[in-house]
Image (cartoon, rainbow, N blue to C red; front, side, top):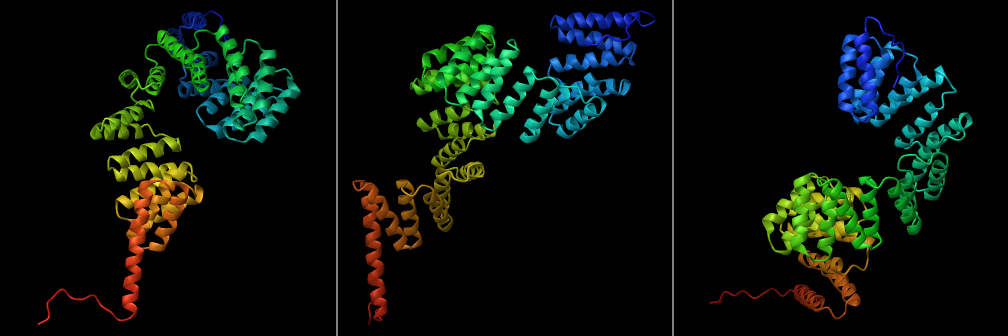
Amino acid sequence: MHFDSMEYGSYGKAEHKARKAFELYEDGRMTQALDELQTAIEINPSNSSWHFNKALTLDSMNRFAEAIDEYEIALQLNPDDLEILNSLAVDYTRTCRYDQAIETFERIQEIDPGFEPGYCNRIITYTEMSQHDLAEQMFYLAQQIKPNCGLCYYNIGNSLFVRGQYKKAIRCWLRTAELEPGHPQINYRIAQGYFSDGDIECCRKHFLAELRINPGDIDVIFDFGLFLLETGDIESAKEKFNRILELDPNFAAALFYLGEIAFSRRDFRQAVALFSRALQKDNTLAGPCYRLAQHALMKDQQLKTRAYLVSEMETCPEDADTLVSIGSMFLSIGEVDYATHCLLCAVDIDCANADAYYYLGNARAMKSEFRDAAEFFIHALDIRPEHIPTLRDSALVYLEMGKLADAAGSINKARSLAPDDPELKELGRQIFAARIKKRVADILSRFGFRPVSKKVLR
């Protein structure tokens, strides 16, 4: 915090309040610090340092939009202060106001080309804008000024990680750890890099290293729990999620994953209780309604299934496979329009998702829109040519449309893949009979025969 130009005089009370705010800030009592600073500013609103300190306090409370307002006031009072400009640019980045962030960083560069944080922090802005070449330029410019900046290595590591260059990202983060062993969550970030790169043992090592330093860090414990689930260490994962609930009983995601463990073990009663508790803590959490819908469907509780699925859709799922699963459940309870919406969303996310096209075909068939159904089945088979349910259902649609040759082609391919399937055999017989009937009708028509009227001639 800044305490420039704070000699005692007519504003002695304001200065006292500002110093009190600093002590509260250092003790982590941010709300009280903010109150003291506000009182000081009301007495003397022309002190840029106090506006800057208020902005820093708001930043520590994640109130970035309000912090920006204070930085801008501070900047009006002290237009060329590099620290104010830098902090303002960082908050513009945090609030996705990237153009303003870049403009502010460029202003810093004009005032003092040797101000290294102006390049270091710009790495983050360009990374979030997906302009990674410019992020690398900022890294190398910062290196010329301060070659051993741990934060620079950390920031460019994030850019590399986003691009899938995990080994390079890990090397950068290891360098950060070497230069700044106390860098916040650095071992956690390295663990994430190793996990993405498939190095399970190094991942575990760095998770444990982070937890030795910060044993109560819920974010790290939670991700370590997910890692343990992914690697099949279910009991250890369960212990981590329970540990989170000891630290924060309202942490809904921990309840959800404990429910997942119970659900996978078919302990549905316990799973339902945990999913319901998770929803009580956070009704916007993705996942619990999806699982509760699956359980309700298993018990043929269609109204509950529908309600849970609609609630899950309100969380705006972005995973194509999840959307396909939700769509298939909607289809199973006859909610064709909801199903179609989910499946089209899945196709928008993943245009090569064969299951999405398959279920869209079924949705169209349920509405007797057989031409559209056939088109969706063709898309599904282009992606996955030997999917028996798609071949079977496309044969049924072709049969309904009277396209018997196409129906025969689909069912013959399906039967070649599953020759002993009784359902396919029966469908094959129906198609064969339809073709025979059609052939006989064609022959009779060719020779001029017409069906005999049932009316008795007199």
